[in-house]
Image 1 (cartoon, rainbow, N blue to C red):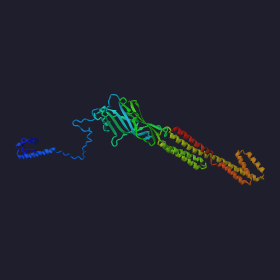
Image 2 (cartoon, rainbow, N blue to C red):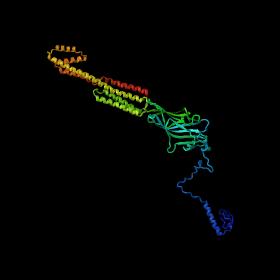
Image 3 (cartoon, rainbow, N blue to C red):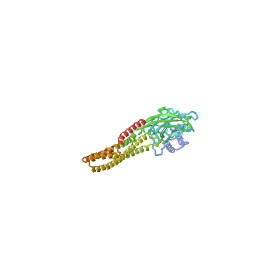
Length: 488
C-alpha cells in the first residue's frame, strides 16, 4: 500500500523509480499525478514484447520427452566450441602422417548386377562401399560414448581414403534425393564412410565356348595416390566382408562370389594394395537352344526330305535346297550380330557352320543325282534310236525273205558277228528280232519290251539318294555326340 503523503516506507521505491529528489515538498495533487505516471511506467516495462510476423509458423515448445536428450548443436554462451575440431587440423594429410601405414578396412554389399554385355565386354554393378579407419583428429569427448552421423557435406572437409575402381569405364554416386553418402564418427576417432555407387567395369571374356561357358569377372579397388607404405587397404572381415542381396539374371546363373587381395606394381609409382570382388557366371543354355540350336537342327533335317522326293521333280528339290541354305545363312548372321567380333572360332560357330555344310551338301547331292540321271538318259536315248533303226532294217529283210526261221536266224547271227555288242544290247536285239519274227504276237511282245526299257530308264530313286538317306542322318548324329560331349 502506497502512502499518498509520501511519509512512510513506501516513498523510497517511488523516489528511486521516478528519480524525484524530494517528494515530501510536492503538493498532494502533484503527488497523485506522479504516482499514476510511475505506475504506468512500471506496467509498460513488465509487458512482453510483441514479435513481428515473419510468415512462418512457430514450432511448439518440445515436451518433456524431448528434453532428456540435450541438443548439442545449440550455441552456448560465450565463444562457441565446435563438436569436431575440423578447422584446427590440416586434413589434406593422412592420419599419422610420416608414421606407419594407416589400415583402412573395406566391406561391400552388392545390391544388384544390372547388366553383362559380351559385345562391350563389361558389366554394371550397384553396391554399397564402406570404409573403416581411425583419425584421432576427429575424436571428441562424449559422456554417453555415442557416435555422430553426418552427410556428404562433411566429407569435403576431412581426409577420406582415395579408393577408385580399376578398369572402370563409368561410375557415379547416387544423388537422389540427396547424395547417398554417410559419415559416422565415434568418440575415439574411428570413422565409418559409406556410399552407394553404380560402376561399369571391364571384364575380359573368353567366348571360345560361347554359349556353353562360364565367365569369371572381377571388380578391383585400389588407392590412387597412397602406396602400401602409407595406406594398407584390406578386407575388414575377410571373406565375410562381401555380402550380396538376392540377385537373379535373365541369361546367367551366379555360381560364386568371393574376395581376394594382392599387391599391384607400377613401374613409375611403386606397390599398391588392390582388392578384388570376384564372381563366376554360367549362362543359361535354354534360350540358345530355342533360338539357335533347334532351328539349325530342323533346317538340316528339312534338307534331308529331298532324298525322298522323285529325282525328276526338279523344281521341288531345288527350291527346298535353296530355302534351307538361305535360312541357315540368316541364323548365322543373326547370332554373329549379337556377338563381339573376335578372331577365333566360337562353339556356336562350329555347330552352325557344320549344319550349314550338311544343308549345302544336300543341294550338291541332288546336283550330282540330276547330272548322272541326265547322262544316263542321254545314253539310253541314243541306244533306243539305234534299236529302232536296226528293227526297221530287220523287218524289211523279213518281208523280202520266204519267212523261214532258219534264214532269219542266219541273218541275225551274221548281224551279231558284224557288230560287237554288250550282253545287255545283245539280249535286247534278240528280243526285238524274235518279236518281229512272230507277227501274230508282235503287239504283246512290243509292249513288254517298252515296259522293261521304261523301268530301266525312269527309275524313281537313284542309288545316291538311297545311300544319302542313311549317310547324312548318321553323320549328323555322330557330330552332335562329339559336339555336346566336348563343349558342354
